[in-house]
Length: 325
Image (cartoon, rainbow, N blue to C red):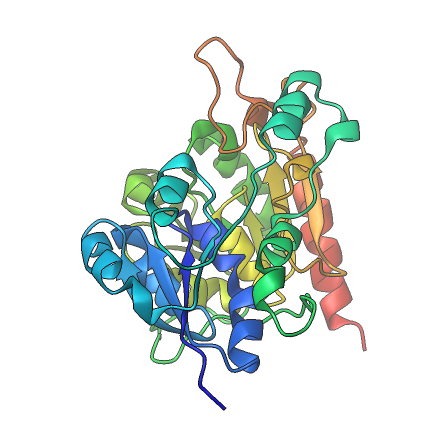
């Protein structure tokens, strides 16, 4: 039997979108398919962690090289589905399968705020796009990231992890919001770790310093994979709509997700759903405002309308459930 050529999968960004492709990539590998992944250069590390991915290419630096070698592939699976990726891949004389973005339905959802236009989860949509290339129907089985060699020294045991970062203000709490959350969690007497990128280093330090022992600030100090290693071992993860939210869910961690400008109806909830998963949704009438969390300058931030008092109640409930025999 002739060995099949690899499949080139395009998923340029962002962290959460790439992580949500893990289950599909794992099924390809289990079916004996070799997968090469094309991502933006900044996301090569997370692309390399997907199960079954053997080669990761940079869209920014190696696109021309791939074009010259395109005949080594059986097909292209474009999970980005944007104009630039479609224009790039359609010039090749090999089959191209494209993830169809629900632009119209999403626009209606954002305009009307009605669950009537709620979108299927993006994992389901990935599976539909890949169906012609799979030997069996997409099986929806969670497959975790490859974390071999990723270690973080001196992490508190079973901490409460607070992911304070986010790409846009519509997806993250303010300093005052996180301070209120941390203060409310103090009576639980659990170690708390703060996670975020270099942009959150200042706010992380400000939250750590005045609030006393039990707070460990990792913002700007860890790589992405190291941050994932921390949430992988957390007792509870409290986070906005972020890549670390998706990583936490993939590893089966109890997640309390916070929704402001983005909304569960957009199809990017933590996957797979866990019995201990909880969502806190803004009371703002402006939500959902956008897919990525942007908001116009005149729009009040929906994150300010989150019922933060629920966080302590839900966290205590999850921790209590974990101690039950």
